[in-house]
Length: 125
Image: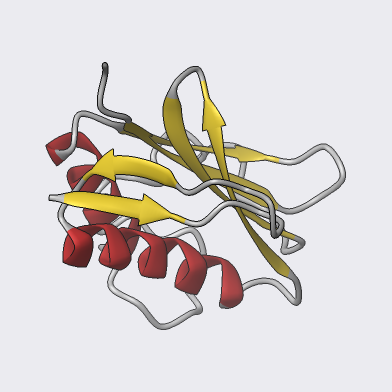
């Protein structure tokens, strides 16, 4: 199934990818919900990067504990044990990304907060 992701700005062309709409929505929803729980400002950016669709969720929260940054996409891994949640949201995002031939990554931003990037390959001509 082809999905169109909206670009930023009125003159942006949509990025077309082959993806299951409901799974892609779930992945983006999980990324945004994860950020909103810990931040006051969340930014969603959709852009083309090396012919792939890149969906970035950037926030101004506390970021990830440095010892967990490489494990945040594992099942039942919770960065903040004082918060509600099962620790499955980001693991589901990883499974959805991989099902579409893509990847997901996380990093702490130099200015504070976290950035999660969901990369989905675009159809090749």
